[in-house]
Picture 1 (cartoon, helix red, strand yellow):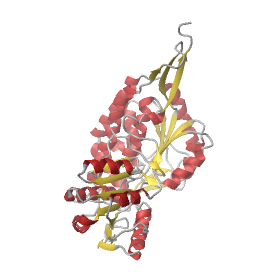
Picture 2: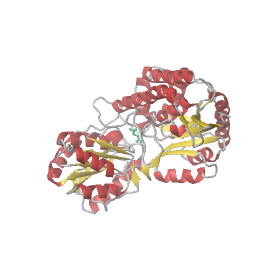
Picture 3: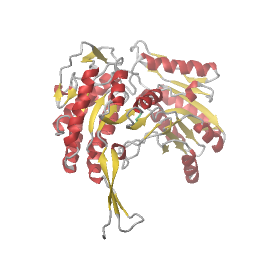
Picture 4: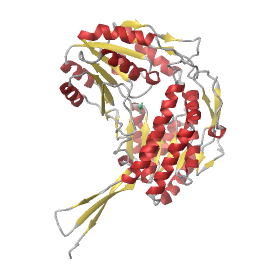
Length: 491
Ligand code: SIN
C-alpha cells in the first residue's frame, strides 16, 4: 500500500559519517518495521560502541574547520537543505508514514514544519549578535560575542522523525557546531534521508553525521554521547526518566544540555470560550499523532456551565474519526508506534474507569486493522486521582473534568511535576493574562490547539526540561558567550 519513493536515493540503510554511507563491522542488525502493516521496511546495522566513538571523533575533526566557516555559507547550506526538503516533500512524508504510522497528511505537515527550521535558522544564522558593555572602569571596554559550543550530540524521538532532528540540527549548524545524530531506532529512515539531503545541500564532510543503534543498544550509544569529552552539548527530546538518567551521566563531563521532556498539558475551557472552536481545537491538540506528542493535551478541564455540551460535541467529533493505514485516502488518524503505547492507554483507561470515570466514547484495540491500531477513548468525570491526569498517557485517551472557578483550575493545572505546554480557551482578555501568567508551563496557547512554529521558543519548565528550541533564542543553546575585555584603552 505504501507508495514507491520518487527518489529512491532517499532510502538509505547505512550510517552517514564523514559524508559517506559507511559499512558497519557490527555483526548485529535491527529491523525497521512499518507499525501499520508490521512488515519489515529495512534492516540496519546496530553499530558497535567503537564505531560510535569513531563517529564522534570525525564530528570533532570536522568542527575544527567548520567553526571557521563563513556565516553566509552556513546560511546558504541551510537554505539549500530547506529547499531540498520541500523538493522531496512527498518522499519524506512517505518515509515518515511508513516508519511512524501517522497519516500522510500529518506527515506532509511534519516535513514542511521540519523544513521551516532550516529556513528560519538560515536567516537567524546572520543574527548571532553579541554586545558591547561599559564596565565600571571607563578605561576598559567589554565586548561579547557568541562562539559555537562545539560538537553536539542529538538524541531524537520517534514521534516527529523529521521535525525534532531539524529543530536541533538547524540552530547548531547555523552557529558553527557540528552534529552527530542518533535517531530513534524505530524511525531512523527519515533521518538518513535528511542526511542525504544535507550532503546535497553542500555541508562539508563530517559536519552532519547519523549513527545507528537498535533499541537495545540505545543506552550504550546515549552513554557514549554523554561521557565523551569531545561532545560539548547534548540535546535530547524524550521521556523525563531518560532525561534524568542522561543528566547523571553528563555530570562526568559537565556538558551543556538541552532537555525537551514529557508534558502533562492541561486544556482549560472557560464558559466564555467559543464552544465549537474550543471543541475542535481541543481535539486537534489531543489527537495530533494520536496523542503521541509532548504537547498533546493530557487533561481537559471544562467549566461547569458548558461541561455537558462540550462533552457531547467533543464525543460526536471523535466518533467521526477514521482510523486506518496512514496511506489510505480519508484516514484521519493512523496507528500507534508499538504495543507498549497501547498497553499504557489501556492501563490508564482501566484505572480511570475503576475510579469512576464515565465512558463517553468507547475505544479499544482494532485488531482487524493490525496490532498497533486503537480507536480513541473519551472519558468524562475525570479527577486528579486518576493516572490519566497524573501521568502523560501519550496515546488516544481524552479525559475531561469539570471545574468551577479560575483559582481551583489553575491550582489543579499546576499540581504536577511537569510544565511544558498549556492551553486555555476563553474570550476575556484580562483572564487570558491572569491565567497564562499563573500557569507553570513554558508555553501557553490561547484559543488554539496547534501552536508550534519555528519562530517560537519551544521548551518547558519543571520536570519538562530546559533550554529553548526554535525562535530568536534557539541558537543560544548551541553557543557560549565569549568575553573580550580591552584594558587601558586610554593608556
Ligand atoms: C513535541 O511533541 O515534542 C513536538 C511538538 C511540536 O513541535 O509541535
